[in-house]
Image 1 (cartoon, helix red, strand yellow):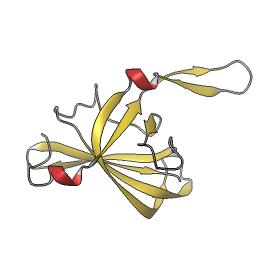
Image 2 (cartoon, rainbow, N blue to C red):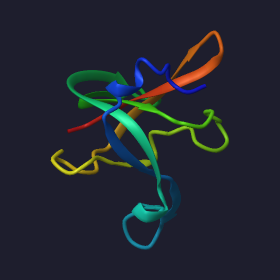
Image 3 (cartoon, rainbow, N blue to C red):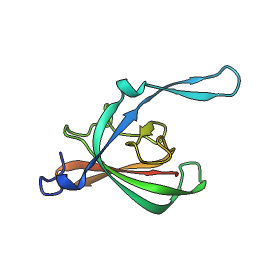
Amino acid sequence: MPVDVDLQPLFDQTVTVCKRTSTHTAGYPRPGYQSTSAGKSYKAHIEDAEVFVRTETGHEVVGGWKIFVYSTTAWSQTTNFIKARDKIVLPSGFEPNTPQIISASIVSDDFGPHHMVIKCRR
């Protein structure tokens, strides 16, 4: 379910999410991602915030961006949920432009998935 019409003006930025497609194993393993042009764009609200996250592996990480993301289509775990392994590209003016995602969580209401909150390193 999309964000309420009254809240949509808060989502004044656009971010692009590139799904992780593979892991290159030659030499030091590094992830492979969709190209930015193949990524999916979402409306977002980006806040500069100190965030503390305990990862799935138990590591404690401090981040600097909190990004609220909404989709104009229904959220679906199989198609468009954003995961910590994906790459996010912020609009120009944000540094770094492609921060590491440290957590991604879905926010639901009585009608189902509503929006996502992405926490990133700065």
